[in-house]
Length: 90
Image 1 (cartoon, rainbow, N blue to C red):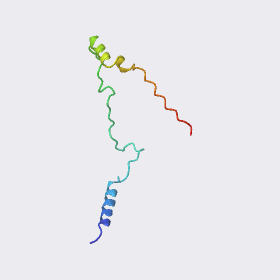
Image 2 (cartoon, rainbow, N blue to C red):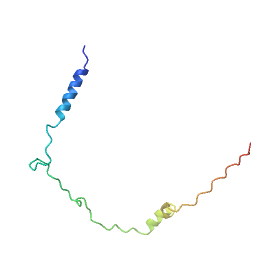
Image 3 (cartoon, one colour):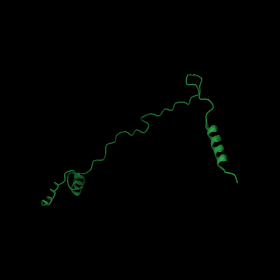
């Protein structure tokens, strides 16, 4: 039985040759076919500002209390680390 490697190599080479474009279009040719430029407005997904519903003052204050005051930004001071035990000289 012969090796399938030469057949696979030939098939790979043939597909690579077939994938190549014959000749690229000349960029200086004004008659060259080019795709039509697509335009999409920068404002296509724009949503105008809407005023959010005003919350009652009790709900936000309760949220601040539940999160530990100032929405968790002001935390108690960290405790100082314990002093390392002194090693005796040898």
